[in-house]
Image (tube, rainbow, N blue to C red; front, side):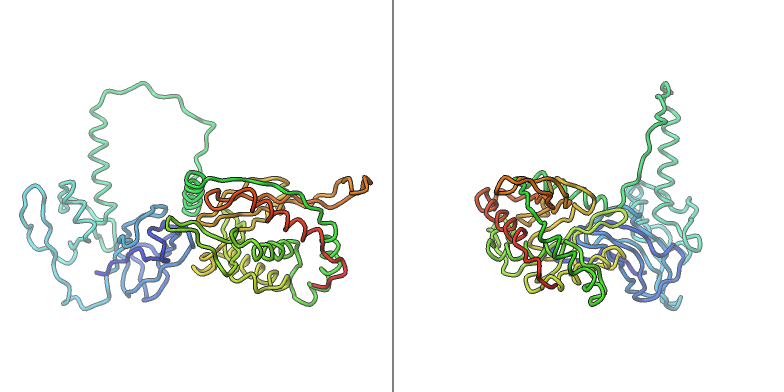
Length: 395
């Protein structure tokens, strides 16, 4: 009998959440065939089987979070019956071995452990697993029956008022992961926040001038986001402390700029990484963004796609937002939200009033790493670069 254990999906990953079982008890499993979907704080991955055989027991239910190395399931390996050995079951109460069991009565380690812990006589149970095998669920069900019997002996209490107007929505594994990460960030990291307004009228003209030819030449849409990404990358080169991460041993200032980009999927927000964004042009950033967004929305992100980010940029303007206060993505020291571009009347330097395209830039920083002075200079540089686009430039 082979054990399927929770693998280590990354150097810093210590646990994972079972997203979805891709096989049912009793199904035949081929070697290297995807068996279960696991969600970590880094990535969602399909775990393959290392053995060929029959899935005889699922030990961890969907939605449960367990540590790396935990047994997830058991597979009866394809091998001659003559090689199978009977298993002895020991009772905690009697401290003696029961007679050797037949092949039909063999129990998994998880079943034996539960039976011993709760003094359950496995011989009295009927199995619901493959070929009548007793599973962990059968043992738990027997314990539930005992508990329900105990409850019937208690005096009845007046019924509580029914709540008809409340709907309970199951928490998905990825939502649990997001909740854990965001709670840790809000609790453990001292956030500071700043907003700067920029006039992007020239940027709007550049994009409008290039979007048709870009689509014909490159095969993808030219959005505003790659322009913002390029400006942020250039500013990070001049203020590398924004491109750093906090550790208890010291602040790590990264030479390469690896942009974490928030991407919305149907039921969650994931943050894949564009590695070495400082080596890419606006066109290159547009292609990298399109590719990684497609992988995120189709569930094809790899561990490398979600690892190694040094600064996060978030396109909240895509949802119509004009102001937000982003939560840091630890251990990164900064996250910048790009809000909606809005046309409105603006007073110019000569006191004339004109209709301009304006955008709010909202940044949150780790105050252990950064202060208002360097952050203010960083944001001022971004504002200046956004307002200085050459309207005749080609992308």
